Amino acid sequence: MPKSIDIIRGEHRALASVLNALREIVDGVAAGRFQPDFQLLSAMMVYIADVPEIVHHPKEDDHLFARMKQRSPDAGVIIDRLEKEHVEGYALTRELEHALVPWQGLGQGAFAQFQDCATRYLDFNWRHLNTEEDELLPLARRDLKPDDWAEIDAAFAANFDPFAGPNREYAALFDRIVDLAPAPIGHGGSPRA
Amino acid sequence: MLLDVRKLEAGYGRSQVLFGPSFSVGKGEVVTLLGRNGMGKTTTVRCLAGLLRPSAGEIHFKGARIDSRAPHAIAHAGFGLVPEGRHIFPNLTVRENLVMAGIKRSDRREPWTLERVLEFFPRLAERLANGGNQLSGGEQQMLAIGRALMTNPDLLVLDEATEGLAPLIRQQIWNKLDALKQTGLAMIVIDKEIDALLRFADRHYIVEKGEIVWSGDSDALESDKQAQDAYLSV
Ligand SMILES: Nc1ncnc2c1ncn2[C@@H]1O[C@H](COP(=O)(O)OP(=O)(O)O)[C@@H](O)[C@H]1O
Ligand SMILES: [Fe+2]
Ligand SMILES: [Fe+2]
Ligand SMILES: [Mg+2]
Image (cartoon, rainbow over all chains, first blue to last red):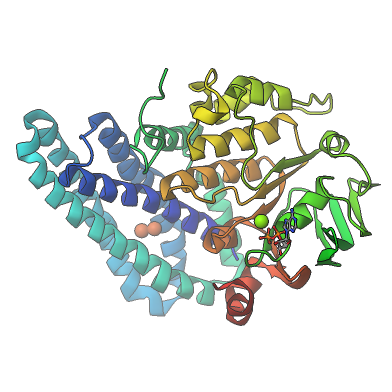
């Protein structure tokens, strides 16, 4: 298995775990099981915005997709769609960030708007991740040659540490999210003194 | 070769559990032991750690034979175990649990110290004065890994480290193991999350009724649906 594919899948797994946690928290708030914790929600927003935009998409757009365009004619249609989705995803992320503010400022009355936005956001991202895992990566493995992988691997290694980001700040952010997330999703807020 | 296990046999009382598995772990390599419950994975690990005396076979670690050594001597040789069920000391604090596990080594460029373990697991830093019995399952698991790191191991063995943990906390453990792998630490990982292992580990051994019935790299395992169905599906 090329190292680059392990890295892409690893980033997908980490991102998916935070997306899942967001889903559980939104559902939990809707059901009255959790109080909204805006420190947690903000940390999650930063993670799901920055990890794709700063760490993950550049690997795909600039390296994996770029190389596949040269080598894998069958992947052309999928790549066009995935690239568009990266742009669309960027807009949806801004929308979700903007929906968080009224909820925080106005309280429960504005929750429905955030919930609605989060549902669309999560559905969109699941579809995107699944397309990459189920359709794109198999084509990449079929069509890219060892030389291609060597170059992509080198580019990824020069990019950053897998999902830790520059200076490992995303690893620390992930820890913070798990710390703040209510049990049984995460460690359940500040420890008892 | 860091670890070389040859034709290991062991059991409990009269019932033999291991029927001669042989496997190896290279420097910086991550290897898994896979297989359904009760197949002998934990028993294998107990032999490696000196907690169970094999009745036959050999275990070579860093070039020396260790199969008749005591657990503390094997730990001193550089074998770090995160046991199934965690086994932290419930009545000691987090700090005491970590400090008492510590083994200093002069040959380490960046040795694991209490400070470094707490930097790696910030959650434990907030819990230092808490007793082991006051920790959640995820915190206990971090403490168990922290204890093993305090021994400054050359080989870290994790027996079901993500068992019973919520998905986000499991992912946190995988993140930590990824970071450890990047430092070049060799590992044996036993876990039910095959998807995570396919990405994370270099090579795999499948244990079935105390024998190794399949071995290969992640590509080979991923494409061998027959082996997965025969030995891993539940
Ligand atoms: N302490 C023990 N005493 C007796 N039998 C045991 C003991 N521990 C495990 N066994 C038996 O040994 C076999 C292998 O168990 P184990 O090594 O724990 O499997 P695994 O870790 O693969 O689930 C099982 O049949 C189990 O019942
Ligand atoms: Fe993507
Ligand atoms: Fe992706
Ligand atoms: Mg076991």
